[in-house]
Length: 507
Image 1: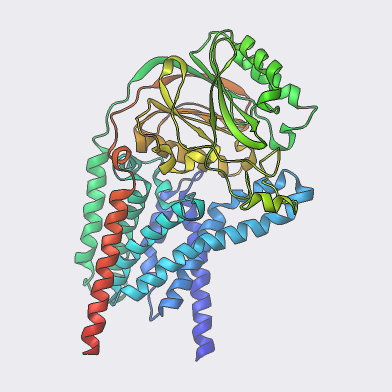
Image 2: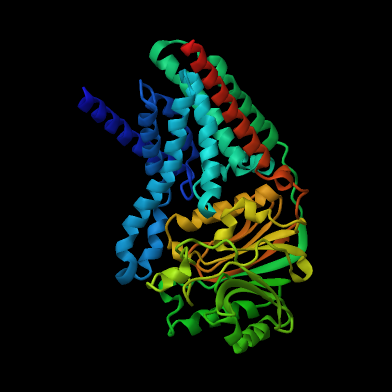
């Protein structure tokens, strides 16, 4: 009997892993959000049966394993840059990352089975706890919100809800609009009962609300400022090759010198291979090519024995007019936790070219960018975190991201990174200037639409007009706090109801 139960659970976990892998098709570059919705609608059927909380947690973990293994498959790409040294690590990195992130989902499914006494109660508990699990994934251990369920909506009008409720609110809406409806459909298919019908009505109300809100989006106007986005297309395995460095540098100089001149020129992350203090002649060449136009570029710099991944701005004379140091670093990529100790054993961040890894800058800031106004600088990974983007006290005029997505190869990673940059623009109601080494460089308007772009894997440049910012969004004003408080209150209420039920049964 016990062996039969285990085989049944194992089979259900295998189906859950397959369902999770299918759900990841909603992420870029496929963007098949309908598949993700279909999986969520089918989830109550997958959870049907007399499962213990532990078993339901295992099913949820398997669902997450399939979802993250497929959605984050691009994580193997950085290990292919130096295959001889790091290639063997790629499958372990993917499996351990997917399995670790899936624990958040497994905990939510376990908790829902503990809190819910009926199928309807369990489904609504899952809506709440799953949303809270995504909060935890975005904040704990420096956070990793990549592949959030809300990202499936980036090419639909539903993405405009980000301006109101942010990414976690949109995840909550996604789950609340599908899981109860899925339970209703399962009831109809299995027993022709409609007991869950009233509980699926909030899902219908949410869908109608999405339609009403997204139909009222504001108009976007354009400024008179133009920005040149420079994309040298330097593959990561060639980027630091001494024979190729002059080629990529000259390519960027040529793009910079092209007429007519824009108001700002933006090079990508780590655009030159020299430390800032050693790059005097290179900066002079850049200023000469720009002929008076300010230039933004990524560079590494050292200060008191610490190394920083920085964005600098050169003024019209070629002097450094501003420096921003990346503050949200990639764990095990740009730094190793307890790095000073780890460096003694030869453990260094993959992306860091100097020392045992980068040091973190002081935090989110604003910088003036010539005539364009105030911008929030973001380097690569920082655009993944909405809390970083809204971390400055005064509202900016635009967001500016420089990145080196060559680390992601030509798989799904660059497309998913772009999708998250578009989400940040919608959330803040601000345009996003994005320059990427190998692509995808883009000018993004405050509604997350791509105004101009350069495709992945193509060298070149584009001159794009900067859109004007919109009025501050609700999410820009309040951030994640309202949705988090709502979810915590809901979870607390469910826990109280469960406790009272147990006491009544004991009496």
